Amino acid sequence: MHPEAGRILRRWRPVAEWHGHRLLRRHFGPAVMARLHEAIRGAERRHLGEIVIAVEASAPPHIRDSRMRALEVFGRLRVWDTAQATGVLLYLLLADHKIEIVADRGVTARVDGAVWPRICAALRDRFQAGRYEDGVLEALAAIDAELLRAWPAAPGEANPEELPDGPVIL
Image (cartoon, rainbow, N blue to C red; front, side, top):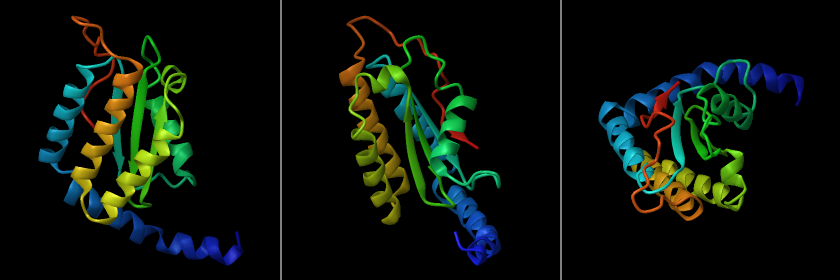
């Protein structure tokens, strides 16, 4: 990176952070978060996967890469801590318009890795159209479909609820 580019980016960072917080307030209020919570709860009744949605207005200053931040959040929220390694994190970094999906090793063993970038691209398109809630619900449905295919619950088998269903605002 050119030395001047770093200085310019640092100067504009507060604007990006402000924009991220504005998007968070506007598109992820309590009612939306409650609907996402119910959607996750409903999805997890059908399979043995665990879905976590994390929304962050802007990344901490030490973070330069959204993928690395998503991996950090995956660990901090303990998405990896399921008995069958069936956790999936949908990470939204609003200020930088970044979307990441991190799947645990049990999921990656059964789900084609090419699925996640397609889900992220579709969600990014919805965000660009201003359809944040619809986009997240569609992404959640797509993740749910993959987990249902890979880890279906047997008749009468309940998902042990290893992780909280509510989306997390960081």
